Length: 271
Image 1 (cartoon, helix red, strand yellow):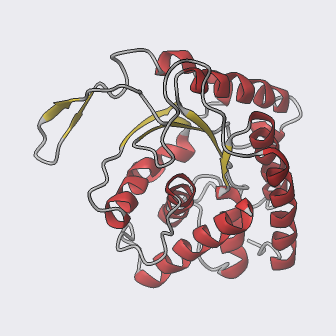
Image 2 (cartoon, helix red, strand yellow; image 1 turned 30 degrees about the horizontal axis):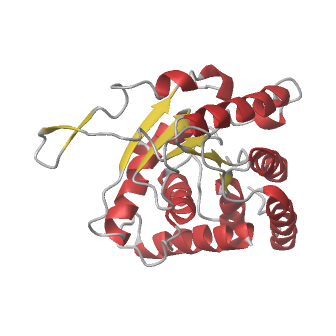
């Protein structure tokens, strides 16, 4: 795979930064009487497709990073995925219905725990299909449902967050296109954006021999999922993953590289 040029990556990050700074600030609290979600979320729902559920689920890796970096902090997460799905396949309203998602969980001893939930989720992390936001026939659907679904999230007291997906391994030009689409969605809807796609491009530029993909050139390898998880952790929890003891079984040098890439990308993107 050809490396994404470092100069081009820096230019892209600068463009994304300007766009984001122009209008993507802290989301407004919902109009309902519910108190605004806390800055550090205690619960999250991940709404997407196979990019989330590969490698035993990206949210699980985020949870391990939380456990390693924020000892004692309790965080509940739920993953709602449909294989191959676009953002319009999901019934967002149903995910916030009472006494459904997150009603119970299991502790370390496998005992069922019935959760007392005042707010179902603090954040709702959403992604579209891997090429939908930039596909000529589907990008309008992305725009419409980004707005619709952020409104549903806010109505239910959750902060909307968009997960910027990555380019296909053999189509690196998708990086800039997806970055533009997700950054614009963040700006239009006053929502956070997780720049996972930019983190992938940065890693490829710095360490092209590290394969972030499986054979289909679309879905993530374990290293790719770990990079996405580190980037998500950095955005949602405002914590650096650099030096985390959780490495997902990757060798320490590889894990450290991915941790640094995630943190550097997030810091550059949000400025």
